[in-house]
Length: 112
Image 1 (cartoon, rainbow, N blue to C red):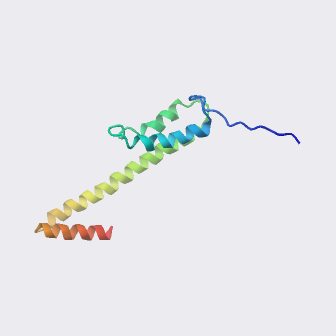
Image 2 (image 1 turned 135 degrees about the vertical axis):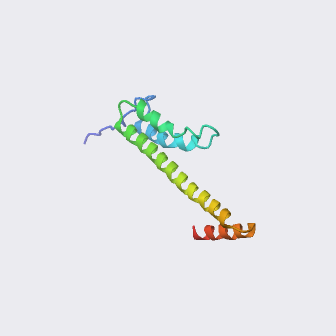
């Protein structure tokens, strides 16, 4: 019985294993999102890995998937934030007093 040695394929970026680079595609954005001012361009990290990688389809796939996940996250956050701001604005415009605003916002919070 002969033992076969299987080596993981390498990425063309930094000569690292492909699975490590795929992990970095996800982690780069996750870590950069917590740094002030850089968080606004953190979504570019997986896109940069996607365009720099020349050999590994595995790394390219995961870099694009990380980019799409970040884009969907941004869109959902913007949509939900817009709904919340619109609800607060509508409640403030309908209210006769600030107590009404509080009661309306409490109702919106309970419903959502």
